[in-house]
Length: 364
Ligand SMILES: Cc1cc2nc3c(=O)[nH]c(=O)nc-3n(C[C@H](O)[C@H](O)[C@H](O)COP(=O)(O)OP(=O)(O)OC[C@H]3O[C@@H](n4cnc5c(N)ncnc54)[C@H](O)[C@@H]3O)c2cc1C
Image 1 (tube, helix red, strand yellow):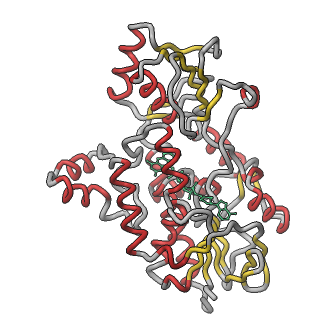
Image 2 (cartoon, protein in one colour):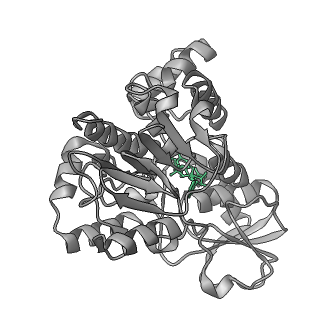
Image 3 (cartoon, helix red, strand yellow):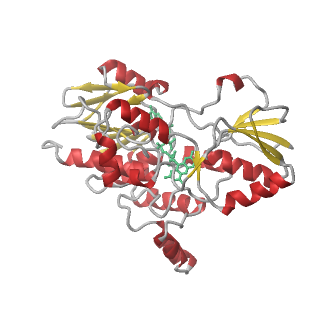
């Protein structure tokens, strides 16, 4: 029986698997999940908003080390040094196709399918020297369940015109897009290109920044400052970081300005009579929406702060990780340890914390 388990077969679980493979054979790791393809959930969402380029840069990949990034493989494939030059200025964004081909390659090389157990885990319980996952015991467990479902504002729940941006859809002649983050910006531009008239319905002006959280939060120094914040300040900081944002650049501004001049794009406070309402309103937030995490918190009376599960800086669960066992969290529910947890870089951070803890365990 393997001693290490990952719960969640998405990109965060997959990235952790790549890191664990440095220390374990496929037969020593069990990955509990719902899809064999680690990009299954992501692929549908990216395709729904017709995303062609990654928001992340060269380091947005699933390998255990940042270097070499996707710019290197791109140089070979495109036979041009351009990706590396762009990467030096943080301007290189791999295409979605390049990223998905990378996932496919790593899936095969790492023998991911040999570790897969295709069934969801209902309950994780701390037991002596480990954890029980629906009856099976493991010494070290990483939880990577992803987001707990799509967020649709309550007042729009019954509106027949509504579709969520991460569900497959076409565009009606008149479209209202609710939200102001990257998904919303992508929808404005795509709906306009499809000939629609677009109203952007937003509560606040979006922040323009390249990554979903400011760059310092991906650095050791920035993180150290974040980890020093008192609980109340940390909650405030995470709320501030959650404001909608999308990158600056002509790619967005030019089509929007032109459409505004033609009277086809405007910002509005309400939905009015648009034929279609696209909710680019992201995901539900907080551990309470995820049955597995909610149950874990209740069973073990874990510490929480507002909607966050309180974690140690290395993304492990305090009280359930010690010299003999490890419970760690990766992906969106791990924001308490890493504000950009819902990124590939964030998944790598949690994976390294997990492996470090396992390695320090005398009876691993
Ligand atoms: C459209 C879009 C574009 C993005 N672009 C980028 C980008 O360019 N760069 C970047 O770094 N990040 C990007 N992200 C963010 C991030 O990389 C993705 O959200 C990524 O999918 C997160 O991986 P995950 O494994 O946490 O979640 P998911 O990929 O959603 O996977 C979670 C998996 O766990 C399974 N699961 C849940 N509960 C259980 C359970 N109890 N038992 C077993 N299995 C379970 C689910 O069924 C699912 O298969 C993007 C996100 C979106 C939505």
